[in-house]
Amino acid sequence: VVSGSEDHLVKIWNFETGAEVLSLSTDSPVNSVAFSPDGKSVVSCSEDTHIKMWNSVTGAEVWESPGQPACHVAFSPDGKLIVSGSRDTLVKIFHADTGAELCTMRGHLDSVTSVDFSPDGKRVVSGSEDGFVKIWNPTTGTE
Image (cartoon, rainbow, N blue to C red; front, side, top):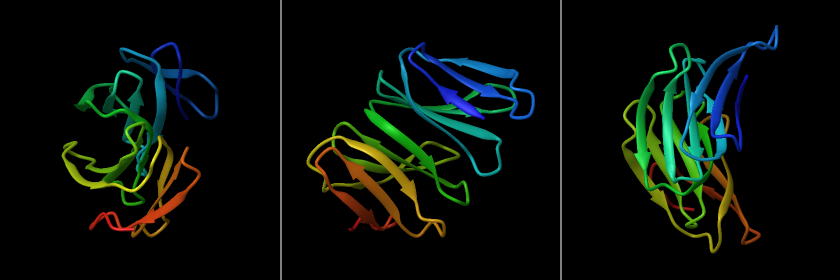
C-alpha cells in the first residue's frame, strides 16, 4: 500500500502487517500517489509542482519532473506510461522510465482533479472542476 499526505511524505506500507516499509520525503504536501503495475515503482505529485518517480524497494528517486502542477497521477496498465492531471487544465503523458513528456492534452477549462487509463491502456479519462469528463487518445492527444 502507498500513501501520500499533507506532512510531505510518501509512505509504503506492508499490506499484511500494516508496518511502514519506507518513508520518502518531498518538499511539499503530496497530492497523489500510485504504484506501478509490477509494484517496483511509485509515482507521486506534490503541491510544489513536482512529479517524482521512486524505486519502491530502495526508496531511491528515479526521476523528477519539476514545473508540473499535477493534482493526480496514474500508471498505464503495462506500466510504461504515466498520466497526470493538473491545476493548469492540462492532461499529460510521461514515459515511466525516463520522465520524458510525450503528449499534452488540452480541452478542460479548470483544474483536472482525476485521471486514469482504461484497462487496455488505449484511452485516458480525465475529470475536471469544469464539470466535464473527457476521454482521450494518449498517443495522439485527441479527444
